[in-house]
Amino acid sequence: MIKKYNSHFFDSPIIVENIDWEIIVKIITKDKKEVIYSLYDLVDKTSYSPYIKNAILASFIWEIPKNILVIWFWAGSYAKYFKDYLWEKINITWIEIDEAMIEIAKNKLKLKNINYFNLDYIKSLEILNNKKNKKFDIIFFDIYDENSKIPKNFNNLKTIKLIKNILDKNWKFIVNFANTKENKSFYEEIQEKILEIFPKNKIEILNDKNDNWNIIWVYNLEKKLNSESLILEYLQKVQDWKINYDSNLIKNIFLK
Image (cartoon, rainbow, N blue to C red; front, side):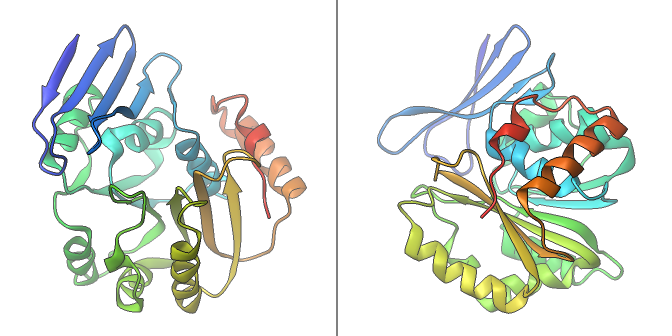
Protein backbone atom coordinates (compact mmCIF):
# COMPACT_ATOMS: atom_id res chain seq x y z
CA MET A 1 0.00 0.00 0.00
CA ILE A 2 1.34 3.43 -0.96
CA LYS A 3 0.32 6.77 0.51
CA LYS A 4 1.64 10.26 -0.26
CA TYR A 5 1.99 13.07 2.27
CA ASN A 6 2.38 16.73 1.34
CA SER A 7 5.69 17.86 2.79
CA HIS A 8 6.28 21.19 4.50
CA PHE A 9 10.00 20.94 3.77
CA PHE A 10 10.57 19.00 0.53
CA ASP A 11 9.25 20.20 -2.83
CA SER A 12 7.85 16.78 -3.69
CA PRO A 13 5.36 14.69 -1.66
CA ILE A 14 6.68 12.13 0.79
CA ILE A 15 5.96 8.56 -0.35
CA VAL A 16 5.17 5.94 2.29
CA GLU A 17 5.03 2.25 1.38
CA ASN A 18 3.64 -0.31 3.77
CA ILE A 19 4.96 -3.64 2.48
CA ASP A 20 4.04 -6.52 4.79
CA TRP A 21 5.77 -5.55 8.03
CA GLU A 22 8.08 -2.87 6.61
CA ILE A 23 7.40 0.87 6.66
CA ILE A 24 9.38 2.55 3.87
CA VAL A 25 9.54 6.34 3.58
CA LYS A 26 10.85 7.79 0.32
CA ILE A 27 11.58 11.29 -0.92
CA ILE A 28 12.23 12.74 -4.38
CA THR A 29 15.46 14.74 -4.55
CA LYS A 30 15.89 17.97 -6.51
CA ASP A 31 17.51 16.00 -9.32
CA LYS A 32 14.35 13.81 -9.49
CA LYS A 33 15.82 10.72 -7.87
CA GLU A 34 13.71 8.60 -5.55
CA VAL A 35 15.65 7.68 -2.41
CA ILE A 36 14.79 5.83 0.79
CA TYR A 37 14.57 8.35 3.61
CA SER A 38 13.61 5.89 6.34
CA LEU A 39 12.80 2.19 6.64
CA TYR A 40 11.71 0.27 9.69
CA ASP A 41 11.09 -3.46 10.03
CA LEU A 42 8.23 -3.86 12.52
CA VAL A 43 8.94 -7.56 13.08
CA ASP A 44 12.71 -7.56 13.44
CA LYS A 45 12.56 -4.14 15.16
CA THR A 46 15.43 -2.70 13.15
CA SER A 47 16.13 0.29 10.96
CA TYR A 48 17.94 -0.14 7.68
CA SER A 49 20.12 2.88 8.44
CA PRO A 50 23.48 1.81 9.85
CA TYR A 51 24.20 5.26 11.26
CA ILE A 52 20.97 5.20 13.31
CA LYS A 53 22.00 1.92 14.90
CA ASN A 54 25.52 3.20 15.43
CA ALA A 55 24.13 6.29 17.14
CA ILE A 56 22.07 4.08 19.42
CA LEU A 57 25.19 2.12 20.29
CA ALA A 58 27.09 5.32 20.94
CA SER A 59 24.50 6.56 23.39
CA PHE A 60 23.61 3.40 25.29
CA ILE A 61 27.00 1.77 25.56
CA TRP A 62 27.67 3.36 28.92
CA GLU A 63 24.26 3.67 30.56
CA ILE A 64 20.60 4.12 29.81
CA PRO A 65 19.85 7.85 29.75
CA LYS A 66 16.75 9.33 31.37
CA ASN A 67 16.11 12.22 28.99
CA ILE A 68 16.97 12.37 25.28
CA LEU A 69 16.63 15.15 22.73
CA VAL A 70 16.76 14.27 19.04
CA ILE A 71 17.13 17.18 16.63
CA TRP A 72 15.49 16.03 13.39
CA PHE A 73 13.09 13.15 13.18
CA TRP A 74 13.74 10.94 10.14
CA ALA A 75 10.11 9.82 9.98
CA GLY A 76 10.32 8.18 13.38
CA SER A 77 13.11 5.61 12.87
CA TYR A 78 14.99 6.77 15.95
CA ALA A 79 11.82 6.95 18.01
CA LYS A 80 10.62 3.49 17.02
CA TYR A 81 14.02 2.01 17.82
CA PHE A 82 13.96 3.60 21.27
CA LYS A 83 10.36 2.59 21.87
CA ASP A 84 10.90 -1.05 20.96
CA TYR A 85 13.81 -1.47 23.35
CA LEU A 86 14.08 1.15 26.10
CA TRP A 87 10.96 3.30 25.93
CA GLU A 88 9.76 2.65 29.49
CA LYS A 89 12.98 3.94 30.98
CA ILE A 90 13.51 7.18 29.07
CA ASN A 91 11.78 10.42 28.14
CA ILE A 92 12.23 11.58 24.56
CA THR A 93 11.81 14.99 22.95
CA TRP A 94 11.92 15.48 19.18
CA ILE A 95 12.50 18.53 17.01
CA GLU A 96 11.18 18.21 13.45
CA ILE A 97 10.44 21.06 11.05
CA ASP A 98 8.29 18.97 8.69
CA GLU A 99 4.84 18.32 10.16
CA ALA A 100 4.28 15.57 7.59
CA MET A 101 7.09 13.49 9.10
CA ILE A 102 5.48 13.70 12.52
CA GLU A 103 2.15 12.63 11.00
CA ILE A 104 3.84 9.63 9.37
CA ALA A 105 5.46 8.63 12.65
CA LYS A 106 2.15 8.83 14.50
CA ASN A 107 0.04 7.05 11.87
CA LYS A 108 2.44 4.42 10.53
CA LEU A 109 4.74 3.70 13.48
CA LYS A 110 2.14 4.44 16.19
CA LEU A 111 4.42 6.93 17.94
CA LYS A 112 1.98 9.21 19.72
CA ASN A 113 3.35 9.69 23.24
CA ILE A 114 6.33 11.86 22.28
CA ASN A 115 7.21 15.45 23.08
CA TYR A 116 7.35 17.17 19.68
CA PHE A 117 8.66 20.55 18.59
CA ASN A 118 7.34 21.33 15.12
CA LEU A 119 9.62 24.37 14.72
CA ASP A 120 12.96 25.46 13.36
CA TYR A 121 15.60 23.82 15.52
CA ILE A 122 17.17 27.12 16.60
CA LYS A 123 13.82 28.41 17.86
CA SER A 124 13.18 25.10 19.60
CA LEU A 125 16.56 25.23 21.35
CA GLU A 126 15.86 28.78 22.50
CA ILE A 127 12.55 27.66 24.02
CA LEU A 128 14.23 24.77 25.80
CA ASN A 129 16.93 27.12 27.12
CA ASN A 130 14.22 29.23 28.73
CA LYS A 131 12.66 26.29 30.55
CA LYS A 132 13.86 25.85 34.12
CA ASN A 133 15.34 22.49 35.09
CA LYS A 134 15.02 21.12 31.54
CA LYS A 135 18.16 19.08 30.97
CA PHE A 136 19.03 16.18 28.70
CA ASP A 137 21.48 13.32 29.22
CA ILE A 138 22.00 12.90 25.49
CA ILE A 139 21.37 15.12 22.49
CA PHE A 140 21.46 13.72 18.96
CA PHE A 141 22.05 16.19 16.15
CA ASP A 142 21.11 14.67 12.80
CA ILE A 143 20.26 17.52 10.42
CA TYR A 144 21.65 18.09 6.98
CA ASP A 145 20.43 19.97 3.94
CA GLU A 146 19.93 19.01 0.29
CA ASN A 147 23.71 19.21 -0.18
CA SER A 148 24.32 16.70 2.62
CA LYS A 149 25.76 19.38 4.88
CA ILE A 150 24.85 20.38 8.39
CA PRO A 151 23.00 23.73 8.14
CA LYS A 152 25.26 26.77 8.17
CA ASN A 153 23.46 28.30 11.14
CA PHE A 154 24.82 25.43 13.24
CA ASN A 155 28.37 26.52 12.54
CA ASN A 156 28.65 29.16 15.23
CA LEU A 157 29.43 29.18 18.93
CA LYS A 158 26.06 30.66 19.89
CA THR A 159 24.12 27.70 18.50
CA ILE A 160 26.47 25.14 20.03
CA LYS A 161 26.17 26.90 23.40
CA LEU A 162 22.37 26.60 23.18
CA ILE A 163 22.90 22.85 23.01
CA LYS A 164 25.48 22.79 25.80
CA ASN A 165 23.19 24.77 28.12
CA ILE A 166 20.48 22.10 28.13
CA LEU A 167 22.79 19.13 28.65
CA ASP A 168 23.05 17.58 32.09
CA LYS A 169 26.41 17.25 33.84
CA ASN A 170 26.94 13.64 32.72
CA TRP A 171 25.93 14.35 29.15
CA LYS A 172 26.98 13.19 25.71
CA PHE A 173 26.54 15.13 22.48
CA ILE A 174 26.23 12.93 19.36
CA VAL A 175 26.45 14.33 15.84
CA ASN A 176 25.87 12.62 12.51
CA PHE A 177 28.12 14.04 9.79
CA ALA A 178 26.74 13.12 6.35
CA ASN A 179 28.76 12.76 3.15
CA THR A 180 31.94 13.41 5.10
CA LYS A 181 34.34 12.70 2.25
CA GLU A 182 32.91 15.37 -0.06
CA ASN A 183 32.37 17.88 2.75
CA LYS A 184 35.64 17.35 4.60
CA SER A 185 36.77 20.98 4.90
CA PHE A 186 33.26 22.11 5.85
CA TYR A 187 33.06 19.58 8.68
CA GLU A 188 36.58 20.28 9.89
CA GLU A 189 35.50 23.87 10.48
CA ILE A 190 32.47 22.70 12.44
CA GLN A 191 34.62 20.31 14.47
CA GLU A 192 36.79 23.21 15.58
CA LYS A 193 33.73 25.13 16.78
CA ILE A 194 32.31 22.14 18.65
CA LEU A 195 35.60 21.43 20.39
CA GLU A 196 35.71 24.98 21.71
CA ILE A 197 32.52 24.21 23.64
CA PHE A 198 32.96 20.46 24.20
CA PRO A 199 36.65 20.02 25.03
CA LYS A 200 36.63 16.51 26.56
CA ASN A 201 37.38 13.17 24.92
CA LYS A 202 35.55 12.16 21.76
CA ILE A 203 35.22 9.07 19.58
CA GLU A 204 34.41 8.58 15.92
CA ILE A 205 32.13 5.72 14.90
CA LEU A 206 31.97 4.79 11.23
CA ASN A 207 29.52 2.54 9.42
CA ASP A 208 32.43 0.81 7.79
CA LYS A 209 36.14 1.56 7.70
CA ASN A 210 35.89 2.20 3.94
CA ASP A 211 32.67 4.19 4.16
CA ASN A 212 32.83 7.96 4.59
CA TRP A 213 29.17 8.73 4.05
CA ASN A 214 27.75 8.87 7.59
CA ILE A 215 30.12 9.22 10.52
CA ILE A 216 28.95 9.52 14.12
CA TRP A 217 30.95 11.68 16.53
CA VAL A 218 30.39 11.37 20.28
CA TYR A 219 31.60 14.32 22.37
CA ASN A 220 32.46 14.87 26.01
CA LEU A 221 33.41 11.41 27.19
CA GLU A 222 34.73 11.04 30.72
CA LYS A 223 37.42 8.63 29.63
CA LYS A 224 39.25 7.61 26.50
CA LEU A 225 38.13 4.40 24.85
CA ASN A 226 39.75 2.05 22.40
CA SER A 227 37.92 -0.28 20.04
CA GLU A 228 38.57 -3.37 22.19
CA SER A 229 37.07 -1.88 25.33
CA LEU A 230 34.10 -0.50 23.41
CA ILE A 231 33.34 -3.92 21.93
CA LEU A 232 33.54 -5.61 25.34
CA GLU A 233 31.24 -3.03 26.92
CA TYR A 234 28.80 -3.32 24.05
CA LEU A 235 28.57 -7.10 24.29
CA GLN A 236 28.04 -6.94 28.05
CA LYS A 237 25.28 -4.32 27.76
CA VAL A 238 23.42 -6.25 25.08
CA GLN A 239 23.54 -9.38 27.22
CA ASP A 240 22.43 -7.57 30.39
CA TRP A 241 19.57 -5.67 28.74
CA LYS A 242 18.52 -8.54 26.43
CA ILE A 243 18.38 -6.11 23.53
CA ASN A 244 17.96 -7.51 20.04
CA TYR A 245 20.49 -5.31 18.27
CA ASP A 246 21.52 -6.13 14.74
CA SER A 247 23.96 -9.04 15.09
CA ASN A 248 26.27 -7.45 12.53
CA LEU A 249 26.39 -4.05 14.18
CA ILE A 250 29.40 -4.68 16.36
CA LYS A 251 31.41 -5.78 13.32
CA ASN A 252 30.91 -2.36 11.77
CA ILE A 253 32.32 -0.25 14.58
CA PHE A 254 35.68 1.36 13.93
CA LEU A 255 37.33 4.03 16.04
CA LYS A 256 40.10 6.39 15.13
